[in-house]
Image (cartoon, rainbow, N blue to C red; front, top):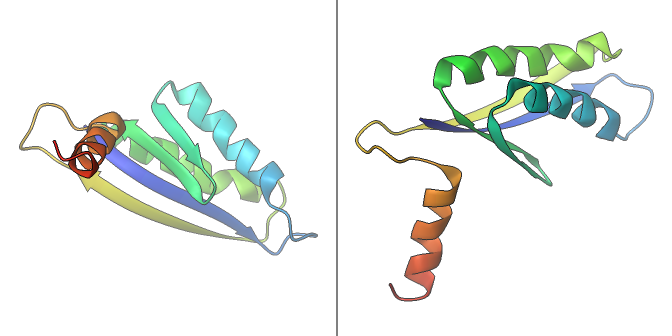
Length: 102
C-alpha cells in the first residue's frame, strides 16, 4: 500500500481563493473510495498505487474543468513494500510512540 500526499493548485483564476477548486478535487477523492485525510496544505491518500495514480490524474484535471488556466500539482509518494502494514495510521503511531518513549 502507498501513502501519497498531493496538493493541486489552480493558477490563472479570477480570485485568490482556491477552496472551491479543492472541494472539487475532494469530491473525486470521496468518490474513489480510497482512504484519505485532508490537511491545511494538501490531501493524503492511501491505497493501491495504480488506483491512486488514476485519481491523481482526475484531481489534476479538475481545476481545468472548473475554469483554471493553469494547474500546478505537487505529489509525494511513500511506497513501502518491505512490510505488510503501511498506512497513515501506522506512520502516526510510530512517531507518537517514540514521543511517549515506547
